[in-house]
Image (cartoon, rainbow, N blue to C red; front, side, top):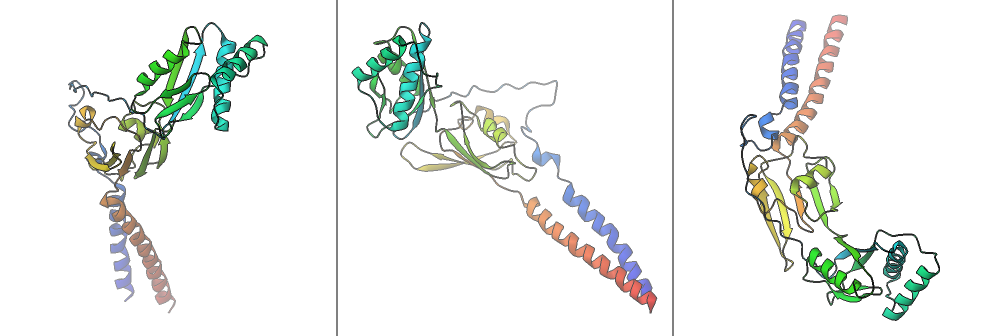
Length: 286
């Protein structure tokens, strides 16, 4: 009886070690990106991806900043006035806005320069900027809106420098990434790899060959796409650049559930081994 228990314990140990090795090892082939790109010493060219600028829609939040090279005080005043108006939800009239601006400059006490105010595109498609008034934004891209704002600013200022950007370009990244969550993109020309890098990249258990991208269409409907990050054709795909409200989901591979099961089995095995040792000791005492 005693010899039988010892024999079973000796047989169990290598099985447990082998199980741990299988769980801890994951084929590098499953986690490698761009597997169809040749090894070092060889090159491969990729077609250029045509970037389609994002279109502005009602409800979008835009950042607008106006800088005047010839008068930094004016820059400070107009952007401060814009920030205050945006924060209060009101817009000063054209005459009062210009009067306030000129008074601030003449008094030699400009307000602290701002990085630009945020504006919500209204239901009618307009943004209302203090001093400049209402400007049509919906249906335009950022470059087109920049031209429209510059045209209005030239009526009151010399050589204005305008910057316009999205403040609500958000992408949701979930599943098997290191830091899942919602991310705000500073640049509208953001690739799927930029976003995954922000999320800390895929974990070792993420399915690189079957990443799900859900994209919102212009009419509000959504379309799903499957992306294989192990293939280099994503570098020339229309899906390479992200759009507003894209959802990226990285599915876990079966190895994760297997590893979880193996971890549970490991603890059962350890408990069993301890019980076996206790039984052997108890038998020896008897």
